[in-house]
Length: 125
Ligand SMILES: [Zn+2]
Ligand SMILES: [Zn+2]
Image (cartoon, rainbow, N blue to C red; front, side):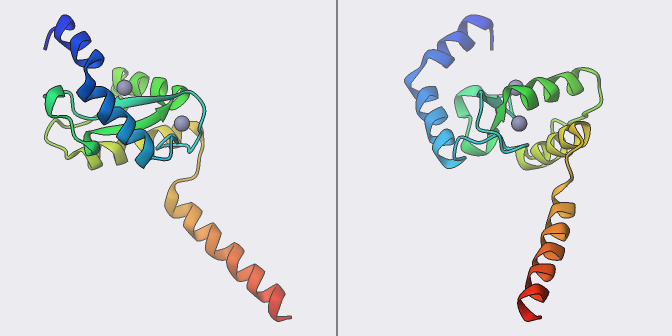
């Protein structure tokens, strides 16, 4: 797809619809850090823009978006063309969160459990 075609696509009604649907479904939050400021849409799959589906898109805040592209450019995030969009998303998310010093989700879930247990033991005593 050349630049002119791409510009046309971005201006198309189809793209605007896809974009707004994605926005609504993601609660206008960054898929990596949860921020609601300066949200962009990132394409996980570029191979066929006209067939882009909801799964090919993620919302990212400006910070995470730039960082993701930067890490890809530096080869610190390596994505396989054959990876499904969700796999690409997980890879990007883990790397960017790691880079930002954010806990991975497993960590957070564990911490949440510990907090919950503490809260419950307070109730009991
Ligand atoms: Zn973010
Ligand atoms: Zn992007």
